Image (cartoon, rainbow, N blue to C red; front, side, top):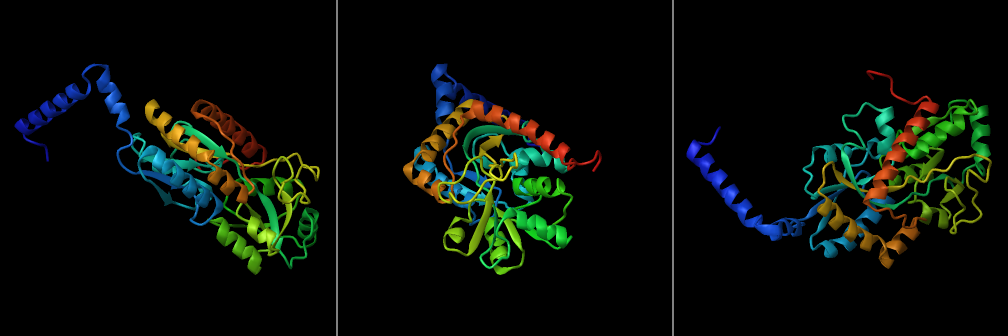
Length: 332
């Protein structure tokens, strides 16, 4: 129902009066900018609770909250390969109270799925945090001792090899496609919403192999899982005996750099405030120690450099998806 004219007039008068008070001189603009944040901030994590990314984001939020003077509340929306929070960013007000962890998968999903959002136009990059260590894992009792054993099994038992990942279109999924397609081999892809349930499935024998991210460390260290190969650029300090794909002759590195972004149109002073708080938090000794638990380390980029990196990733993902024949068809 439309408000009566006198009511609308009073509202306009009040808005004008408030704007005049806040905007009087240069101090008014400063007052408006200095007011952020005045209430809790929601940080969306596009992965299930309890995984490595969720736990590190929770600690980062905990460390950044006192710097901002407001609580940062974690909201999880796992599934769809880490892309579900893009719709949250697309519909959110660009006021700094809704932000999200931004995984590499969103840049790929735009080419492989029919999505209503655009990973560049609908986001404001704030800060790059780190990257993920991926590896091929089997249960301790598995017959597989080397990566080549998987190819041999798939060759001798077509369509029987089951491999779990953290979702369709994720980096582990694309690396598997590249490795198996090049050899004319097939496997059964079993996507999971989160790392925890994926690793449980591997350890219990529900699936034969898992390609997991950096939540698998404790299970490898205690012998419940065997790590066959890593997707990182260099061998891990934690498991120096485990080869990388490059060591085995494959020119493939997959580390999925990730950061934090807000909706498109986030004001520069809000970006700066969030960036400064998260930068201080990510170089806190407690956070660095937490990353090290998952074989990660800080990989900092500020707003401008991170935005450029996002555009580069977006173009590279298009090339990879087209090369593997995974691009969605027009109208699909």
